[in-house]
Image (cartoon, rainbow, N blue to C red; front, side):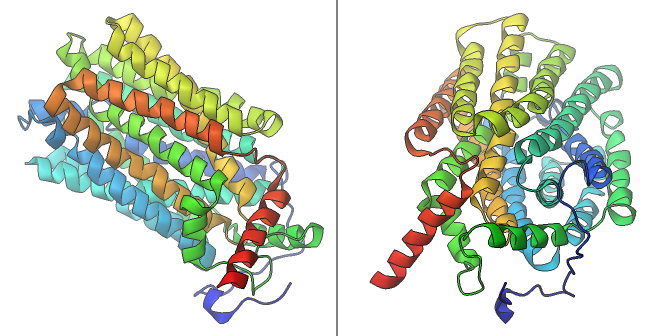
Length: 451
């Protein structure tokens, strides 16, 4: 394999590629398990806010505007999206572990800012820091697991990753809701966050190993087996090319990116708007906490199945089905009423999200070459998590103008449309990366010859 150009070399000391490295889940189960635990702490950090912070906006600070209330999700989504992009790009340049440790440093002040907040601006600031933490840490744990398992078990690996993160999110949301009902909205529900942040930081600093060398080894093996896209230094794309390929120019990566964005649009709406509406409809804080916890709980557990199934059945139609199941779950919050019906809506949302979440990540990894996979994952996660900001802002504006039910219905309709876009535009990616790479390479050569 030819040496890379100086501009594409990592800015830190190069990471060696030992010949003894082996790809695969069983061969790397200890580090993989450790990364699953680390990601559980990442999920638990954001779970602190799922059921309680929207209620603090009204109870402690008297906010009545839905747009202002959801501003904490807007700030979270924007910063997390940009942190994803940073994590993907610099994971390819300086390695994964440094990014992971940096992300945990941003998490340390978050619980204290929420506990002692004298104004809503402190909550927004806490969510800016939380967004950096989530973008850097979740992105790197995803990338590191993909590095370790190699190409054969990506769906299953992503299922395990998302299972750990969202199960912890669910349990954290449930616990904070019940702590809030027993001890008040602050400070007790947020004290566990101090433990979560310290535990994640300690594990990342002292026990997590760098995995960049595994990706380099896979890249060498891929080149030896097939003529993949941009495998030589002259063909490796710039970050700008990766950005546009992932965002728009490649139909598969575009389909995945828009589906991820819409998925998190409806998640942002459920996070920020639904708890307020449910309390307004007469549900207790405990009931709201249960609904807020069941959704990510079903989502997390189901991913143990859906991630592995996508390795057998393929990616495309699982994504389509997941988006459409989500839209049905959202519809139940609009057309029906009562705790049990809304709980069923949360269950359907969880199942639908489980169908798409690990599958979308696996699809990106199917298409992207190992040399630039982390950057592609970062771009995908940029668009996916921008959905938090877009969804919260859209839901807040629609709720203020037309009412909460209209806002929920609009997001549900957009979710169905997103699934239809995947059905129409996306090709199957599982087991076909060589064909996909050849197609994009031919397009790149065609652009060069016509330039």
